[in-house]
Length: 172
Image 1 (cartoon, rainbow, N blue to C red):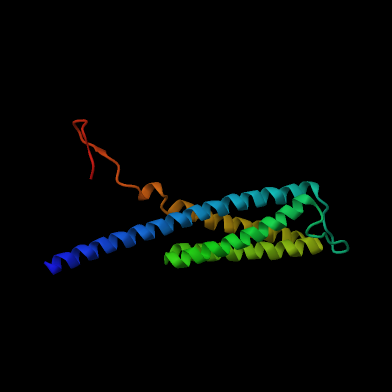
Image 2 (cartoon, one colour):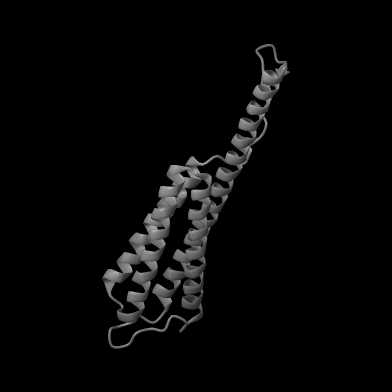
């Protein structure tokens, strides 16, 4: 009798652990989607400044809070950094290798874009602007890949009813 109870307890423990892992991965997917949205908004703010802001030169650098759109760009950059750190911590907690790697690359890309942005605001160098763009693209690719490969909350739901050939439905 105790062997049956132990086997049942073990099986239910594995199911609970699987559900917990599913919850962690769904949270990672949602935070990846949040990072994608933040990166897109960050890109739009950068393009607005690029089109309508003052272009820095080596003789005349631009302050990071010299205009409202640039200030929002900088603030969102800091928030992106915090979100990317949180994403990596969640990925490590979930022990999901692909999420850990892509979150780490995304974080490094955001850091790289930040440093390129600092360089651009100080000198206006085209290479720094290109660096921001390439780092943005790398971060965006990482987080979009996570949105695609990680399970959604809907995929964790109870199995849907299957319809048999005669039109009746059954759950499995």
